[in-house]
Amino acid sequence: MTHKPPLIGCTTYHKVADQNPPIEIYGLMPSYVRAIQAAGGIPILIPLGLNQAELQAIFDRIDGLLLPGGGDINPDNYRGDRQNPTLRDIDEQRDWVEIELVRQAVAQEKPVLAICRGLQIFNVALGGTLWEDVQSQMPQAIIHDYFHRDTRDYLAHPIEIRAGSRLHQTLQASSVRVNSLHHQGIRDLAPSLVASGVAPDQLVEAVEVPGHKYAIGVQWHPENLLEVAPVMRSLFTGLVTVASNGHH
Ligand code: MN
Image (tube, rainbow, N blue to C red; front, side):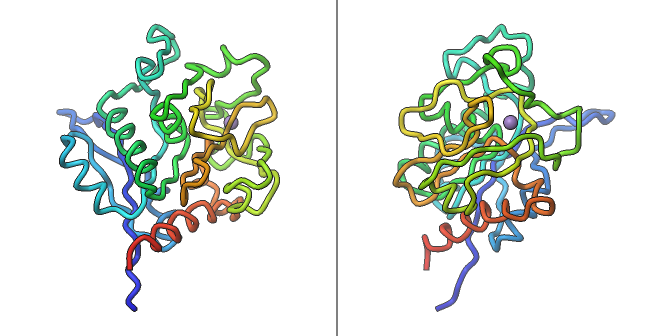
């Protein structure tokens, strides 16, 4: 039996590059691409600007889905406060694409790994809500936004992992230290998700869909930790392994 490496669809951002004249870009940080490659998968970038039928055609062909980090989600998607002054980089097209893909992946049991903003859109797509800004809104919040404080692989705080969870099975640990590059976070967990990891301030930093083959969301950035915390590779090998079992 020949073994085909699975295709892992990755959503992308839209940016306007500061050139003269400015140019538009759909992009993805190479760290995600390399993490999927290292796990044996083939990354496929999913552009914005597709209609529903085109997006569906891509979804049907990919074996797994990766939702990367990025800007804030439009609060209209979770009955949040559009006026919050900390909101940045809202992209309604990207919100729509990712919400569609999350709902399909959950309904059709396609493997999905959701990272940072990915975890947040995962929660919102399934009916959960967010803190528009953890630091100013969540009682007793520790520091989570290390964007301008340290490098992307700085292990900022621990996570306690729920015994018996898929995350626990994947990482083989009951606690891990993680990087923290986010200012938003989960407020109300979506009804169909369970919390599999929490920070010391009780912020939910890992979620999963019980009974799903592989549907994990993490608030940290495992793609930046492959060297300093090699255990994080297992999140990608888990995704790729389950994705490769989907076709023969
Ligand atoms: Mn954090």
